[in-house]
Amino acid sequence: MIHHTTPDGTPPNDGEGGAEASTEACTGSALFAQVWSALAEVLGPATTATLFRRGVKYASAREPLLKQVEIKRDGFEYRYALPASWDDVSPETNAALRALIEELWRLLVPLTGRILVRRLENLPDLCRCGLLPPEGSR
Image (cartoon, rainbow, N blue to C red):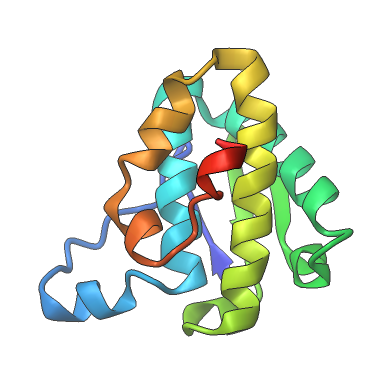
């Protein structure tokens, strides 16, 4: 499944909400989009894409499912493609996302200190879905 992003690097907002959105919040695609948006709002789409590419590269050694994630530049936009299985909640997808988020943490802390990881810690779905790195590694 391909998830397109807008020129500023954020996923398009379809305006849907409510209970259905809450049950979908722990899908890999929804969580990936939330993290992408949180970083793109501050860093911009090019830097966000670079960080995600590196995070995917490093984490895919532990979680092969990440090898199916594609991040590409299309003109002035950045787009990502996620495996179709990421539209469902599964332990495999959560493990892959957890590994990616841990790598993003390792990349962000030396660059920004705690500023951007605090922003990610404030995403309620990451906490609720159990995807934040363990306290000791934060």
